[in-house]
Amino acid sequence: MQTRTLKQVIKAISTVDGGGVKLLRSLGQSQELRLDPFLMLDEFSSMNAGDYIAGFPDHPHRGFETVTYMLDGHMLHQDHLGNRGDLKPGSVQWMTAGRGIIHSEMPQQESGRMRGFQLWVNLPAAEKMKPAAYQDIQPEAIPILSLQGGGRVKIIAGTAEVENQVISGPIQGLSTEPLFLDVRLPAGGHFVHPIAQGHNAFVYVYEGQAEIGSMAERHPLETHAAGVLSDGDRIEVHAGKEEAAFLVLAARPLNEPIVQYGPFVMNTRDQIEQAIADYRNGQLV
Image 1 (cartoon, one colour):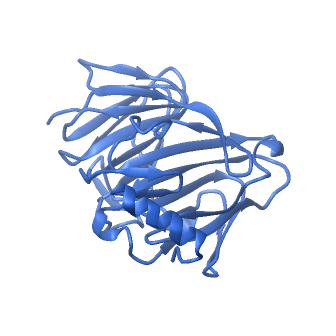
Image 2: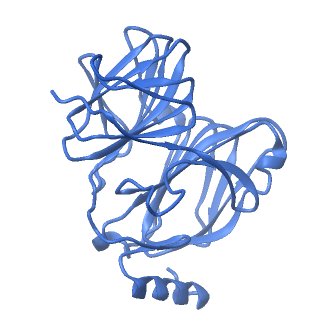
Image 3: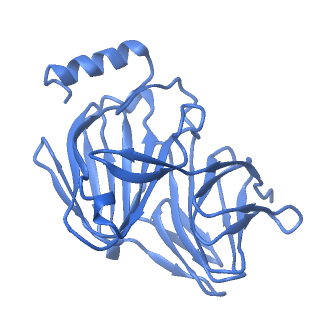
């Protein structure tokens, strides 16, 4: 077994997106800070309605997938094709933009905590122009695995293999073979999980702090930071003196050229120009 080590730390920075929503962005701060096929990871968390109430009014996407994972609060997704989805605490929406979608994500509350994540996952060239699709996943459809030493694992995508238990999440069969786990450990807790050799992987800590790697080579990862991992066939994460919560994300890299212009992610500049023209002409889909 080869335990992955911490190769790079990407500290989240404050930014504003949509209609004025305050975010913390780790992956995706720049084109250099990506991890194929992951394009971006945003965390949003606030008790102040002024930080999120403007939401994300109508905007387009083409060429990739967006994954919205809610911890607290209520967002409403709507698009120009007539689709509608309620994103409530614990729910996930896995949206494949494909050849194009124009949608909005707007808060359905005027007070209280809004907290969650949005992840962007690239699509292979052969799938960038396929029709848009959605998987709206309610909390009860997301398996939760209890750990013997305390803590738990939510399995959103892929299959968890922990402590002789094998449990698959609701997202399966995608070409990038994503693994998406939400793990919570008690103080001093320990988490070990296999990761397919050759798949890119990172850990994002959103509560507490963690140490990444085997007993012989551990490196700290602070709150609101993404830890990009070396290659190997498993990860080891250790909680510090306090409870820790973190996301584990891994997927098969595409190894294809990326040309991005805002909400359009394609393989060539000509394809980006076509996406812009299609959007302007009402022919994005």
